[in-house]
Amino acid sequence: MARPHQPLPTWADPDVPAESLDPQGLSRRGLLRSAGLFGAAFAGGALLAPTAAEANTSDLGDPHLAYLVGDHHVHSVYSHDAKYTFSQLARAASGYGLDWMVFTEHSNFGHARAGGAEAEHREIVQARRDNRRTLIFQGLEWYIPGAEHCTVFSPPGRHEVDLLKRFEEAYDGKLLGYTAGAPGHPDTPRNEAHAVKALKWLDQQRRCGYVDDVLVLANHPLRLGIDSPHEMRAWRDAAPGIMIGMEGAPGAQAAAIPGWRGANSRRGEYENSPSENSWPGYPREAYLTYGGFDWATATVGGLWDALLAEGKLFSVTSNSDVHRVAFDTWKNGDWLPGQNFDNTGRLPDPVNTAEPQPGSDFWPGQFSRTHVGVTRYGYRQVMAGLRAGRVWVDHGQLVDGIEVRVNKEHCAGRGVTLGGRLRVRRGERIFLNVTVTTASRPNHHGEVPNLAHLDVIRGAVRGPVADRDAWRAPNTRVVHTADVGGRRGRYTLRIPLGRVDESFYVRLRGSDGRRNGPGLLGASVDPHGPITHEPGNGDPWLDTWLYTNPVFVDVVR
Image (cartoon, rainbow, N blue to C red; front, side, top):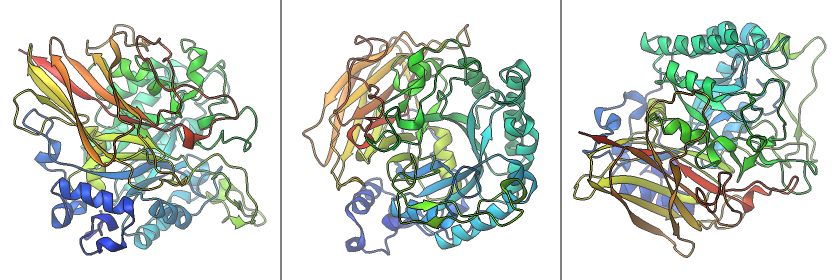
């Protein structure tokens, strides 16, 4: 079970004097105070299940939230293509301000059958002891049968390792030979059905109490074009309580720093072309990133919006997917005689060469951040916040905070926040309230970020689609842009959304304003969205964005 007395993050601990915090820590403490959650009100979450107030998404008003910063996609020496130890990664995550992280090692025979998962767990337990202000989950990067990868993780508990091992052996596409590169075409009805069966099995382990919780998120969904729209809908619908979303932006964000990896490099290492395994309905543009974000998320009126337009929550995240950090000087150590990954499940410890080594990644928290709204601090609370969709993401520490509420015109309540649903009668007038806390200190590139504009994106909710491979949402577009480049500190925008005549959702997007242009579906849909960069010339620090999850507005009789 989760340990009692989990120490609060430094910025949230009233026993840590304010003068010892950096500007970011001071800003986050201020946000916590403004939410009324400082000190004892924010403690104890590791012991408690989510409360009724935390689960509330009605128009009576959501609770005040504090946002914990995390990364659900991290690799260590227990992945065959990575190189860092748990202590290196946990120290980096703490240094870059993460409150929570998930170790997601690749499925492999050494991990499942040669004791790798158990050895990994022992090191994670030690990392939890050594980094007591960071919530550290053990997870797995699942090779989806017939498709790409997913993050799978549960909270600390008696069966957290057994769950991953049992799941890996019974349902992992790599171990079963059900993935790209295996004999025959991997995208078959048999393989797609096995992926659905896997998710239902995971959900059953949660329902029967074998583990307290489990969550699944699709990783880099359009990197290879093999996650088809109908597969993503099938995963979501098979287990909506655990299959909660996808990476809005992949890792490997340092891949296209000029002069680093080569003339053809792209952010996210999205450097592929359609293959025989790809779903044929995706355009060629789908294989690129836009402002560092996956095409499925970055295209207004595209695949993410098509999923949301059915009226079902599907979250986006951002993370490091750290394997090898750009400009880092460590290399993999040498194997002892007779050892290999299949019989150890672990790489040798890395060795410092003092010379830059190949790599495309940032450390956890260094560039990509996923912010999860909670009312208490703990493992279960992070997972509850993710499931509720109280999520926003940013690159380059673009802002310190963003709070979103949708209110009825005369409602005295606090309104409904990210992931929630506001119930209204036809003809009622509603408003979007956005409170921004601008960047208070230099980011990890040495400059103070500037949020230049915020876009309000609105889409009609029309219910389930007849064509499960539909990837367009024709009734979604940017409906308002706020130019905020000259504003500093903390400010609130009150944006009228008019009188409601049908159910819809609204989400936000913002950027530093340095790279934008007409969206892929035209300027009338998205006049200044993210654009792709020239190959080899994609400095991520010069093109940073934030995205929020949606708020749904449901018309009731």
